[in-house]
Length: 402
Image (cartoon, rainbow, N blue to C red; front, side):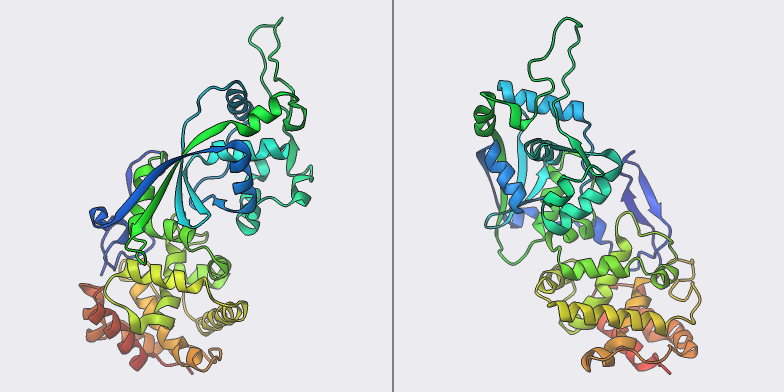
């Protein structure tokens, strides 16, 4: 059931092994996406700076969740603003059009956020940037109450020190409100934006993965879940973030902190997807999880609150289990075992809009782990429709809660 999982380390580019989970499914990370089958367009647009600012401030331009925090220092940000003020060309920005007036930044986050902060007149403090990113993701912008908080920001006055002691850069010390005659020219300065859009097929977003991987200048191969989290971010995903930090869940996963490449969050997504839509599975895990993620954006607050409580009740049903319960023979977390047990335990409760009552019977877990039908469906072609449904059905027949 176990194979080696290969991911690219963000800093070195080396191939490393993930050691905490079984790659007991067809490796989505290495799946090739036939981009030639899609109709993709890219078109240049010269947006002026004030328009780009309003796009960001209104939430029309969003920073994908997998991208790093804002990392520029004030000197580098000031040099960008100076280049724009004097008319020097700056690198183009790549945006992905996910819907009308809704764009994801593929490349250009640092430049766009430098402009945003300059016009706001505030520069983020280094030790608050991770927290500010969470605030930005939650609100779509930075609320004025946070911008005015000196704990998070200092004033953005251009820092352009001269190399010569007897010369001063004419923009040094200025801010957006004190640009004077340069302000209008700055507002109207244009930046070339390349808008990338998938035209067809309309209901299949799989080409987006390859678009991000090929155009993101960081050179980092994104996992499908990292891209999925950005494309389908929702209140449901916020709930997944919360439960992924539960101590009981971290104990079952065998990892004290959330996984850098969000594999643990993907396992939670799979569990809920199989619980709610498992009967509609059609042999492509990527498309199945994409479709479920898109559907989950429509879930009401009441639905999400119930699913969170249901998961907590599942964790309670596992409270007597050891930390290696969902591990394979090589002491790695087994997603096929977890999702099968999760669906078996929560299935009836979900249908009745109730919570799990009782604890999972240890003997039934041992029986499932040794069951020939279950093992066969978990060893080969694990994402085939027949094997997925066979695993789920066998777990329903064997797992007992008392």
